[in-house]
Length: 188
Image 1: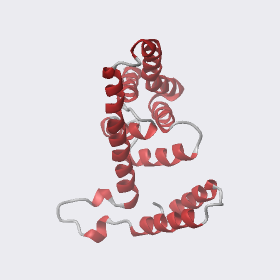
Image 2: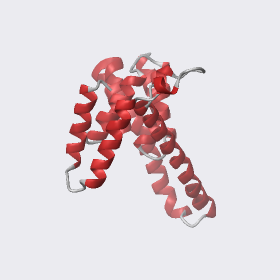
Image 3: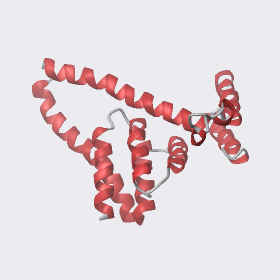
Image 4: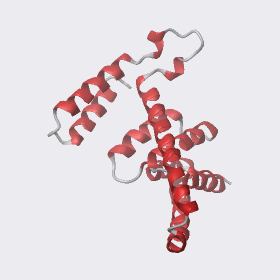
């Protein structure tokens, strides 16, 4: 049963997350809330690790969730089911695109996908910012601003952003390592 759930959830994610790995984040968050495969906090760690390792974030996250849910067979199931819709769509589109390349319907369809994928990526960015720079667990109707803002995380974000802007010649791995050390030291 768990393999069918993994297949269904990650196939659906791969089918509707148009725009790349970051567009999978809203779907992954819903999976985290619905199943015990990983928590929303695990999702933030998965994002950090996936962005600093080779491979797409969606594939890395699916592999992690599948492994956590059902070991190596679960990892293979989740990863393959995430990629399968793209493979099917690429095969179908590549065969049909030559026939319909000049069709206004196809052109308008591709044009309409742009804002949809941009919206998914922008929404994912807001989720990552909120989870990283705010104490979202303290959000309530009467929460004070001080209990919601994660001051150390915002300071580290601003310092590293300034460093990236001023020290453009430094290799990006330096900033990744500094961010990882700060996260460990400040328990972010």
